[in-house]
Length: 168
Image 1 (tube, rainbow, N blue to C red):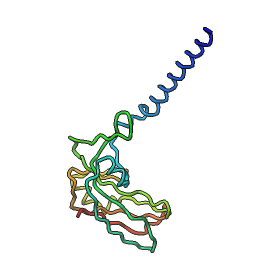
Image 2 (cartoon, helix red, strand yellow):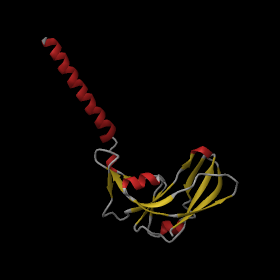
Image 3 (tube, rainbow, N blue to C red):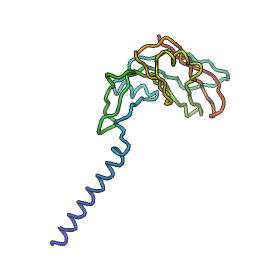
Image 4 (cartoon, rainbow, N blue to C red):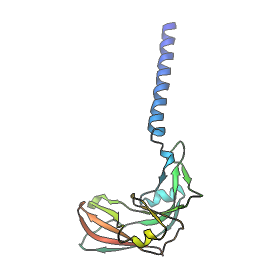
């Protein structure tokens, strides 16, 4: 009887230790709660998290005839994940750039991806806004005056058009 209870105790301790190691290495190991996040063009997630501010106007210009999904761009508040779950949202207050422009990245069904054209969007970038490499531009205010240019790239090679994004 004592041997069985000792085995059960050891197995319980082992399982608890393994769970703690897993929890630490998967969530705390990556420190997901420390970094600023964006919804990467997923407007529904932005609304669900309570960070959506407003839609932006998008005008598409194609060099080749192809149909793509509706491109979305919008302004949202910057946020971080919660300390214990990525489903929890901590809105960034008191930061220099509390807002961000979030744009679509992919149209997988047509083998298309979208890329911010940093050279043509120079006015927006130089206007005291901070640009990042993850399809996001940080803003001081939830408005901007310049035009953001987004390239439409087909098959990872050809630029087949542009999308002009601007505030209403």
